[in-house]
Length: 178
Image 1 (cartoon, rainbow, N blue to C red):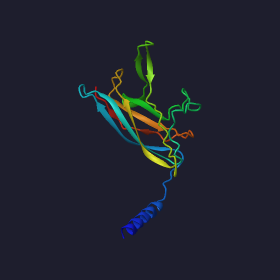
Image 2: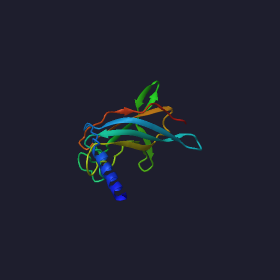
Image 3: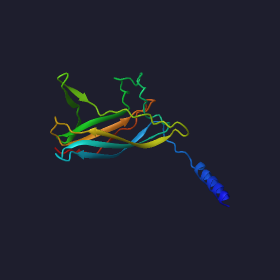
Image 4: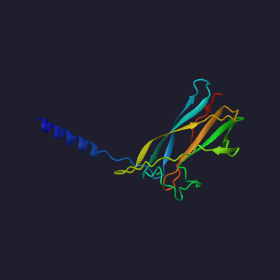
């Protein structure tokens, strides 16, 4: 009787999961802002880092790049080298303004422009339904010692491997402590 019960349970489980309709989404990726967590230095109280979280959906699952994806159009210097584009804004006199972040390069004795852009690793499922959804988190340094403005925000969008551009989302205003 135990064997019959086990077989019946396995068949019931297979039947229940096989009836589930696979999710499908448009082939152009879409994203939504989830949250932004500010991490402050425990000694100084200065907001040093933040964790950006977005959710995504993509119908053909072609989000992300392999480390070997360095030939055009994904070559260094191309607009598609990074597949997650993050822009930094400061609230200046009541309006948000996109601001380049600078860092002193002691080797060249010049300021270098920093980027928050990132390369999302390949997320394409190996088998089955290629439609995917999930959450992406990115940790970034948000302290800008060259700025005296205390409110910032970010915009984000992603590209898939077919070079489809997602919608653009914005974080709410983020208050930085100095």
